Amino acid sequence: MLASGRGSNLAALLEARARGELPVEFVLVGSDKASAPALRLAEAAGIPTLALDPRSYPDRRAFDVDLFARLKASGAEWLVLAGFMRVLDGEALRPWVGRIINIHPSLLPKYRGLHTHRRALEACDAEHGASVHFVTAELDGGPVIAQACLPIEPGDDEERLAQRLLPLEHRLLPAVLRLLAEGRLQWDGRAPRFDGELLVAPLRLGDHGLQPQQRPAPAPSSP
Image (spheres, rainbow, N blue to C red):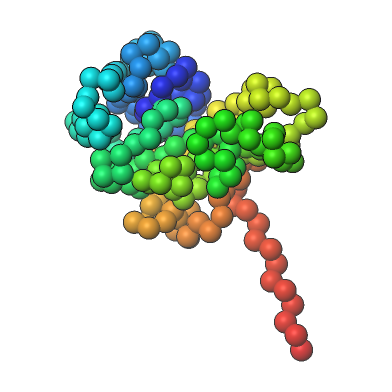
């Protein structure tokens, strides 16, 4: 797992594992900030950590090449990005495509990049949410696996909207990772598949976990 900040999604994953809901082993938590609280959380859980300073590399690609070499050496099979605030070099991540997921605080393809809560409010959207997607070289542009939605309320500002969304993020990411661990969600080299079928629309988080979206009924044929 890579994180640049507090690691609240890492905490949610650890709690899900402690409840027996997430059959995974965390082999490394890395960050581009040595002071990131996510690293302290990992250390407390007995997970090896890695902190690399981007300023000590000649350019972004050199940093990413070293980072991914260290991830490979850790034995990691999957990589989870949760608040990792760096754009990754496309060539460096290419061998990992199909094995990297990211959680992003918007209903992709809306609002790639930063300030997603502000942008949703400024657009007067009726709903907001979070997405988990496979990572590709395109910023926040890989195939979306699953989403969690909530209505935007009249009293919402950026901070309140972010706080209301966070509990959904903490349910969404463990649910997706569990599907990957169980083999129900797979990457076929081009697109995600769920239970063997091409995932034509993101799974939605509901009261009973992740569910496929209902397809509209076909229009009746003309006589």
